[in-house]
Image (cartoon, rainbow, N blue to C red; front, side, top):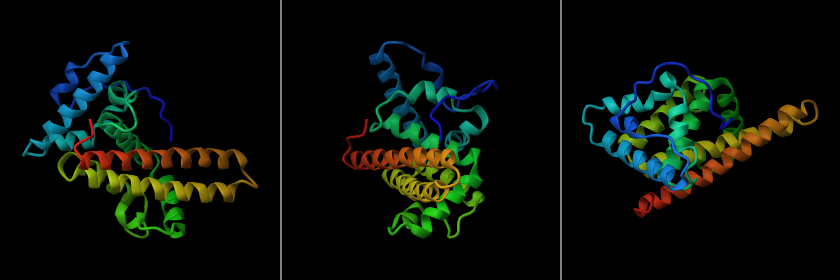
Length: 212
C-alpha cells in the first residue's frame, strides 16, 4: 500500500460544504488548523445528518473522486489525531478497493495463523473473500461517521493487525524464490502494523475526549 498521491481528473463534487472552504498553504500552522477544522466539521455534519446522505457520500467519496482532496487536507497530520485517523482509514479503504483479491489473500493468511481476537474484532466472515473485505472496510468507515467512533477505529486496527500478520507470513514464504515480492510484503506489514498502533491510540484518546 502506498501513501503516494494518485492522479485523478474527474471534477470533484465534495460531500460537504466544508471541503469548499479549505485552501492549500505552506504555513504548517495553517495547514494543521485546516486539517483539524475540516475533520471536526465533516464528522459533526455526518453525525447530525438524519437522512444518511452525507455518510453515503463520505463512504463512497474516494471511489468517485480519488484521494487527492483528502490527501491535501489530512496527509500531513500527526498520526495520532482526528485528521490523521481519518486519513489512515481512507487509505485502508483505498487499499482494499484497489486490490481486494490481495487484501483477501493477506487477511486469510493472517487469520489462520494469528493467535488473537483480532479477526473477531475486525468482524469479517471466515473465510473472507474479496467482496466480503470490501463490504467490511465500507462498514467500518460508515461506523466512523454514524456509529461508535472508538469501536470503528478498533475494528480498523484489528483488521490491520490481521493483514500485517498475513503479509509477514507470505513474505517469509516468498523470500527464498521471490525476494523482491517478499520485501514489498514486509514493507506493507510494517506500515499496517504502524496504522494499527496509531488507530488504537486514537481510539483510546477518543474515549477520553482527547482526540483532536
